[in-house]
Length: 117
Image (tube, helix red, strand yellow):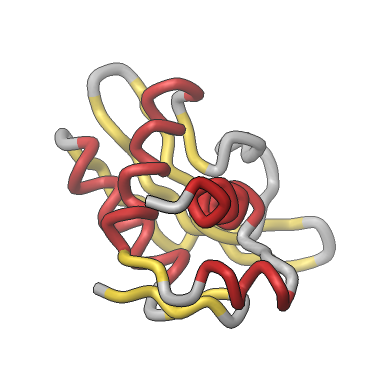
């Protein structure tokens, strides 16, 4: 795989953003590429996105390891600086948790970057 493209996909998975020229280099991304990167992040950091704190206020979806299980939580803003949980899923399998998380966050495209399932 092209190293510049690989570097940009890593950046995209971590920041969820690419510039227009970067998007042109990357093109469409296979969901498997994203799943592999998110899996590595969870294995090393214990959560994805790595900067999210699942116990603090956040808007979006976070995956984290707790004991021997993987928790996927989705919260939305429910008031000024208040966040309500709308979904919590518990997985035994990291692969299943990551696949669900990637489908939820990236869907079929994010920030103008197509995701192929």
